[in-house]
View 1 (tube, rainbow, N blue to C red):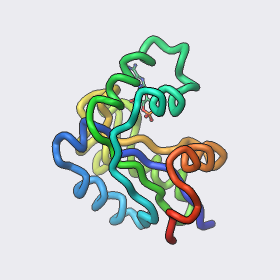
View 2 (cartoon, rainbow, N blue to C red; view 1 turned 90 degrees about the vertical axis):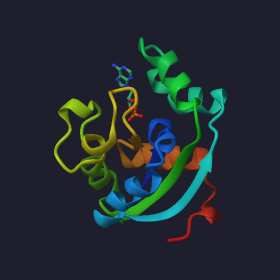
View 3 (cartoon, rainbow, N blue to C red; view 1 turned 90 degrees about the horizontal axis):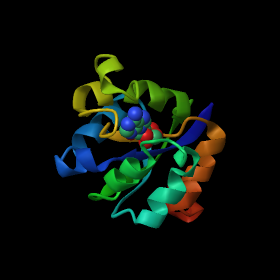
View 4 (spheres, rainbow, N blue to C red; view 1 turned 30 degrees about the vertical axis):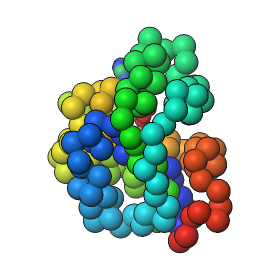
Length: 139
Ligand code: CMP
């Protein structure tokens, strides 16, 4: 079924000029980039986005990392986009990521792991709505 997921190309990747290379992996996997914007995430945006992790020991570091340089926020569309993108990203920790995945190819460590992708369709809708209005998504 065609669905949408939310993606972030994180600061470690934008700083190394890897936006195009990450997008090539996404597109080669059959996902379409139907909305995309480069932004400097504010502390308030990062805190709200990662609210579910606020009790975790790495929350402060996560917010600092995500606001340390620009990110590219994206909406991806395709067959089973949520699961497909999670496959394409690879494991959260790049040491455990499979060959050919974005994190295996580009990530530096678990905190600087190059990309974020939604973990469910419900969360995809919530995350997309934090950064895009429906008229900005052109499928
Ligand atoms: P992401 O998919 O963006 O969702 C939460 C993020 O927290 C995750 O990717 C990692 O980048 C980060 N994260 C998870 N575990 C750790 C950890 N042990 N130390 C630092 N960051 C982490």
